[in-house]
Length: 189
Image 1: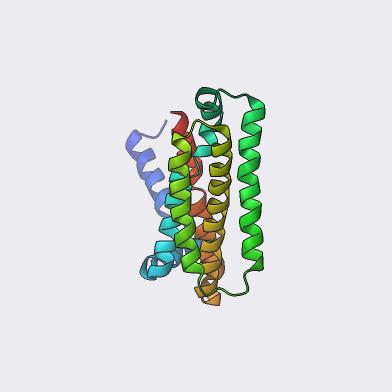
Image 2 (image 1 turned 120 degrees about the vertical axis):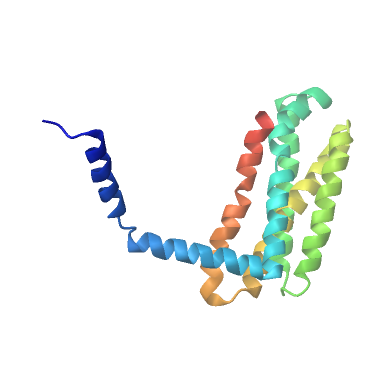
């Protein structure tokens, strides 16, 4: 009449054991593993990616807190928030222009270090400020140093990579920069 539970289990077990992982997936997983190992073993890239993850996780959440800060601390409205966000965007534009005007990669590690320090200090001072004008200057510095740090990390990593690993590690860098999405989710919970 019907199969027993044991017979169905054995039949399913046989089907599962005969399942083959597609070769494209095997190749992808092999390349991904190779990229993680290379990133972990090569200290400059490991530290650059670690810094990028920390910045994305810790510093980029200020965007989510901006409406609350504008309303509760500055006693402002949508216009005040627009001014703050515009100041941050202008800072990003200035940092982009600075990187465009740089002629060489030498010294980029100093730019990364200084802009990271400026980012941290600016965020700390911004969080304690209650004056709109001071907040505008500080958020300008936050936008400038945030963009400068992340873009400089990308330029630094690309300049020290060998060609056959560039695409893979740039994908890992993209993955590292998306860590702020999870930190933004945690801000609301």
